[in-house]
Image (cartoon, rainbow, N blue to C red; front, side, top):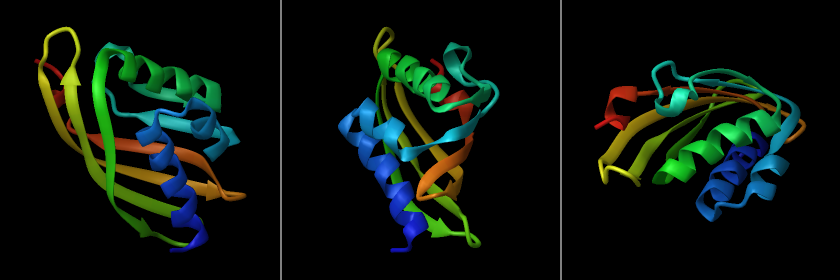
Length: 127
């Protein structure tokens, strides 16, 4: 593993553990998130700062019993990693099963995630 893929793996390990402190620790102070338009709960769009992105993820995890499984971490240049994986879970209220592929384009700075651009099938998230 490269230093960049190790930084990415820390984020996915923190998701699996539902460890908000570890999630925040994996993000650069100047973090920027781009969430796919059309995501449920109105979370799609541009989010600046680790706390703003943690709020997005907290909303999703509050409404969905969801795993974020990065199946491949692909180095892409000196400071970029592309994570390929799946979201798998259930919407808590409707019991709607979700399985959606994703690609996350991660920029790494100082061994932390400086940005994350999400690409996913948002239609799979809704009943």
